[in-house]
Image (cartoon, rainbow, N blue to C red; front, side):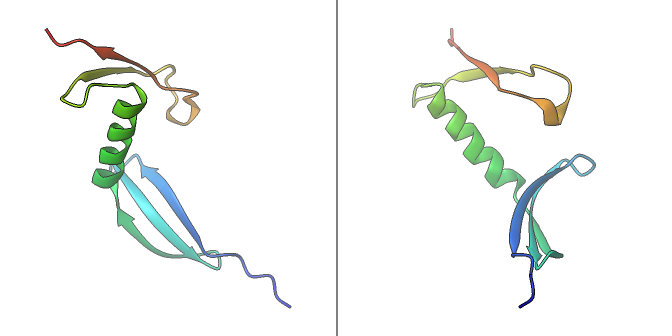
Length: 84
C-alpha cells in the first residue's frame, strides 16, 4: 500500500499580481489555477453586509485593518456608516 497525498484545492492571495487564485493539487503536485478574485470579493462583501445587518437597499461599511501584517489579522473591525 502506498501513501498518496490527497488531491487538494487551495485559495491563495498573490501579492504581486493582486489576485486571489484557486489552485488544485493532485497527489501533492500542482495541477492548475484559476483567478477567482471577482467571485471571492463579491461573496465576501455580501457576507460582510449580511453579518453587519446592513439594509438590503444599500449602506456603507467602513473597514479598519487592526495591524499591518496581512497574514496576522485576527478579526475585521467594521461599522455601518449611515447615509446622509
